[in-house]
Length: 125
Ligand SMILES: [Zn+2]
Image (cartoon, rainbow, N blue to C red; front, side, top):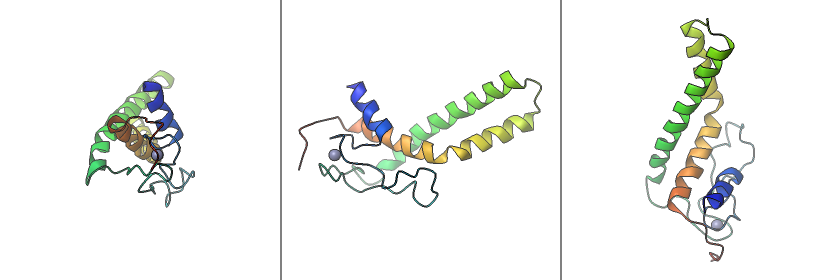
């Protein structure tokens, strides 16, 4: 069951049927396209935004990822260059977080929708 959710999250597939794509473009680093999502699954018709404001919840996941990336950047900087100035830590963390915006955005939504929808191979409209 957890394996099903990992599949949906890492392949960017519909959490209900694992067939339809969630995002319209594979170009995750295209600033005009990385956030474009399909409204429904093309395969089973599952509506991704279950209710109005559903994506606000994804911000909690996004926050957790942001904290994890920040801590990882801090620790790596410390291991590589322990004498670094505080501004270097700060600058690197900001840089890493900005560089990872499309990844944080997509994976936070995929994780969030998988918390509320289970895999059901028979779900076809
Ligand atoms: Zn589907």
